[in-house]
Image 1: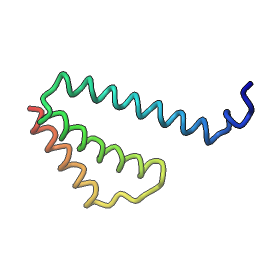
Image 2 (image 1 turned 135 degrees about the vertical axis):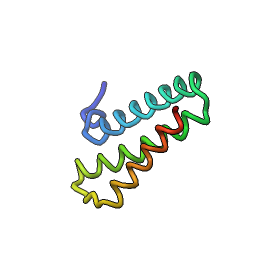
Image 3 (image 1 turned 90 degrees about the vertical axis):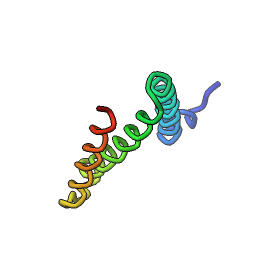
Length: 84
């Protein structure tokens, strides 16, 4: 019989995190099998950095100075050059 402690908030958050991690791993395997690694890896890393920065601005209220915005623009420009 399952007790209530298995359905507590921390347990559910850990399960959700593990599920999302497994999903991201499977997605990465699909991407890596279809694209050249020299394209897929830099694009994934660059987009991760931009997404993390944007998320920290939106959800954590971090400031977005012009230098950081310019850096994000350079990353996106680099990605555009790689995938051309």
